[in-house]
Image 1 (tube, rainbow, N blue to C red):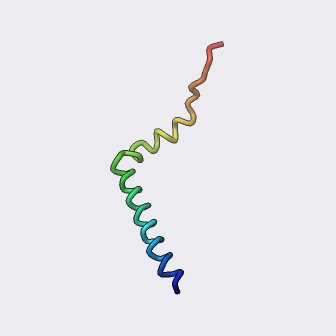
Image 2 (image 1 turned 135 degrees about the horizontal axis):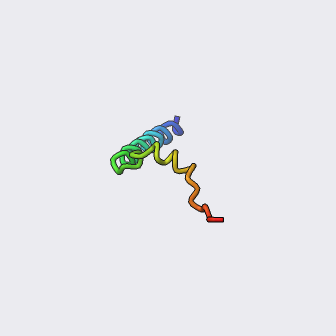
Image 3 (image 1 turned 180 degrees about the vertical axis):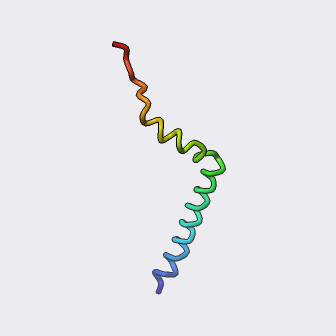
Amino acid sequence: MNALEFLVPISIALGALGLGLFFWAINNGQYEDVVGAAQRIFIDDDDKPL
Protein backbone atom coordinates (compact mmCIF):
# COMPACT_ATOMS: atom_id res chain seq x y z
CA MET A 1 0.00 0.00 0.00
CA ASN A 2 2.95 2.32 0.59
CA ALA A 3 3.91 2.11 -3.08
CA LEU A 4 0.48 3.32 -4.19
CA GLU A 5 0.64 6.30 -1.84
CA PHE A 6 3.86 7.27 -3.57
CA LEU A 7 3.12 6.37 -7.19
CA VAL A 8 -0.45 7.69 -7.60
CA PRO A 9 0.39 11.35 -6.85
CA ILE A 10 3.47 11.14 -9.08
CA SER A 11 1.44 9.72 -11.97
CA ILE A 12 -1.25 12.38 -11.54
CA ALA A 13 1.41 15.10 -11.47
CA LEU A 14 3.09 13.74 -14.63
CA GLY A 15 -0.27 13.52 -16.38
CA ALA A 16 -1.07 17.11 -15.43
CA LEU A 17 2.38 18.20 -16.62
CA GLY A 18 1.86 16.47 -19.97
CA LEU A 19 -1.56 18.04 -20.38
CA GLY A 20 -0.16 21.45 -19.51
CA LEU A 21 2.64 21.07 -22.04
CA PHE A 22 0.13 20.01 -24.68
CA PHE A 23 -2.00 23.11 -24.12
CA TRP A 24 1.15 25.26 -24.07
CA ALA A 25 2.13 23.85 -27.48
CA ILE A 26 -1.33 24.55 -28.88
CA ASN A 27 -1.28 28.15 -27.62
CA ASN A 28 2.19 28.75 -29.10
CA GLY A 29 1.17 27.65 -32.59
CA GLN A 30 2.98 24.31 -32.77
CA TYR A 31 0.04 22.70 -34.58
CA GLU A 32 -0.85 25.54 -36.94
CA ASP A 33 0.48 24.12 -40.23
CA VAL A 34 0.15 20.36 -40.02
CA VAL A 35 -0.43 19.91 -43.77
CA GLY A 36 2.55 22.07 -44.74
CA ALA A 37 4.86 20.07 -42.50
CA ALA A 38 3.68 16.87 -44.15
CA GLN A 39 4.25 18.29 -47.64
CA ARG A 40 7.74 19.63 -46.87
CA ILE A 41 9.18 16.14 -46.94
CA PHE A 42 8.59 16.00 -50.69
CA ILE A 43 10.52 19.23 -51.41
CA ASP A 44 14.09 18.48 -52.40
CA ASP A 45 16.21 21.42 -51.26
CA ASP A 46 19.52 20.12 -52.47
CA ASP A 47 18.73 20.01 -56.19
CA LYS A 48 21.89 20.92 -58.09
CA PRO A 49 21.77 22.03 -61.71
CA LEU A 50 23.41 19.61 -64.10
